Amino acid sequence: LDDFGSGYASIAYLEQFPVKKLKIEQSLTKKLTDAPQDTRFISSLLAIAKSFNLIAIAKGVETQQQLEILQELGCERMQGNRISCPLAVEEMTTFLHTHRTLSVISDQ
Image 1 (cartoon, one colour):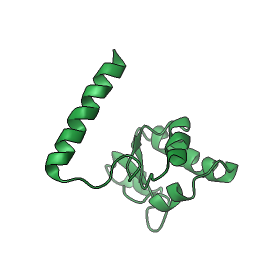
Image 2 (cartoon, helix red, strand yellow):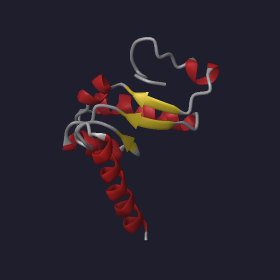
Image 3 (spheres, rainbow, N blue to C red):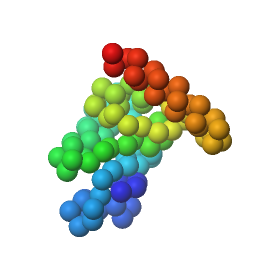
Image 4 (cartoon, one colour):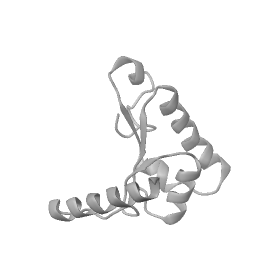
């Protein structure tokens, strides 16, 4: 379910459709700061995803601060320029191979 938290992405869709992933709208991520009202909203969306056994993905992560706050809130999946700029297929293959290798090493 893309752009959750804005527009027509209703919470009712979580029961009506076979949704597996909930993508948090990037405009919400952009506003993310250490201000309690900002973190509470994202935290609530992450809790909703968890309660429905969904994978939550924060879109539009552009700063180290956003990345760290999302990690502290328990968001395990993110996308945006802080993670990687857009890549060609060959570059993406290398990127995924490198990060999979790093993940395996850190898990041991």
